[in-house]
Image (cartoon, rainbow, N blue to C red; front, side):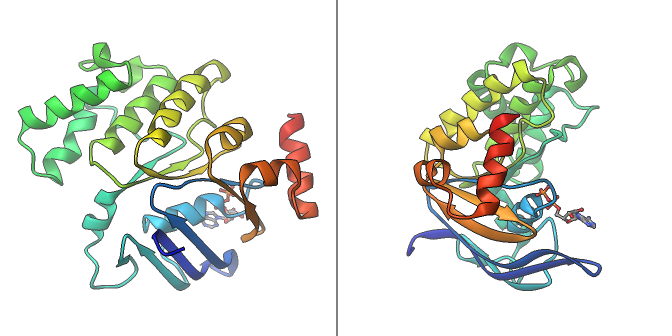
Length: 246
Ligand code: ADP
């Protein structure tokens, strides 16, 4: 793959003496949509957090859009501005309005003046169908709405890459569809997306590639039609049986 925008080579990650990632070799092409799945505790969240340097790694190398992100010479803020992250628990600022939640980083990092930042934020809220909530606070929103605000906030930085860490896992079932709809729309745009999720329907329909992890390793990966119809390993077969039954 010559056009890799994310490149992980021999990545190892320990939490004290527990090894959470084992020799991870993983590439994502510009514009690719990759879903990471696997049992709880298999290292999925750790893997994507490393791409944004939210974790330190114990060995190996990660290059994002040409930047060696664990090199001391790399300006982390510059790299992080290219890589949006959407978390399971939204992480909105409760004391700021919805609009301010989206504007704050544009002002601090992109140095936009308030009017310019708010204009961008309103456009994004319109895209999320939430313009009417702009002046309310996060606690007035449903979980699905909060997650759409969190997505808008990450888009405000105009990232090339969006990392999703189980974006629908904390949502009531009736809220999941709206968030997946927004993600489907983003997938059609020019973003590179890496998404940890248990939503296998979304993976089948939207992703270019599915990566299956277990016990800190990438066990197999492939096009969704191959992975879902003919998983190569016993571990992936067992995982699919369990998630598809529940
Ligand atoms: P997944 O996202 O697949 O559920 P995680 O990446 O969250 O898995 O976790 C992988 C393993 O690393 C788990 O066994 C988890 O308990 C452990 N782990 C994750 N974060 C920490 C941490 N901050 N300190 C110690 N252990 C951790």
